[in-house]
Image (cartoon, rainbow, N blue to C red):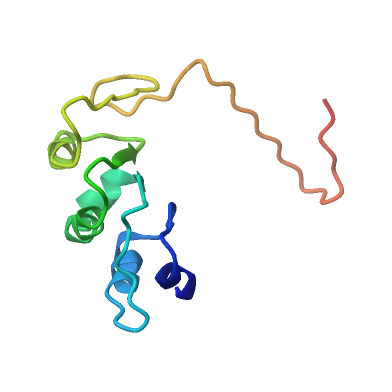
Length: 126
């Protein structure tokens, strides 16, 4: 927190609620996010769906106008998509892996491997 108050961070990592707590501190004051050019929201659907929108908006309001917003989510329900649209620019790019509809579809081109062993000394050999 002290480092945040002394500098102009280009990257800050935290949950929306925790970031708001830090940004609300009076001593040391941490309010300058002018150098942050990106906001990344992982599990964005859950954050917006669970009522974190006011906290997210508070952080976004402190970013420069030319920042980029990146949403990462496994599902993208219509209601959440509409809410998220207010944070995106007109030229926003959407990347879908799997299906581009509202259904949650696993990408069939990704190979998944799993190895289970009850022997704690087991070694996976290729």
